[in-house]
Image (cartoon, rainbow, N blue to C red; front, side, top):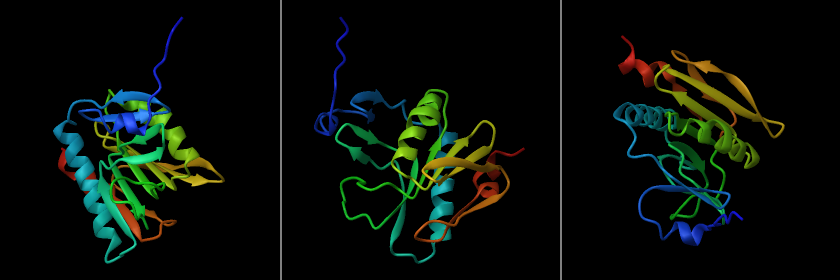
Length: 178
């Protein structure tokens, strides 16, 4: 007989190190992301903050906990959250979630988190591929994600967000082009 441990947010709060909790299953985060991963996530965060102007309803954050429910806690690379009142962790679905893909997290980001973000009605999900200098943007339409396109040099305007937001992927990837 195989016994599977089931964990909750209370357990998650006790753990040392970086973790995510998906449907009661703890998943260790990879060691600190590579420098290129950090640079790209930082560039995306900068692009979002710059595009929002003086909007007071939303904030762009990097690596913040989102307590989806008692057995699921995610730590997206970048988010745009609006009208959040909890200061300890996000309680509402972000309007935009960005995950920078690494080999060790690809399946988690492309399959498991994709499904959770879709179920939780995150308006936009962006998967960024640093080695390809490409981002895939998905928009929630009729409770399902539809692919808006692949972006490398282009800008994308998120039209269904509380605050104006956009990402110029040409700027995000500029440092890595030869």
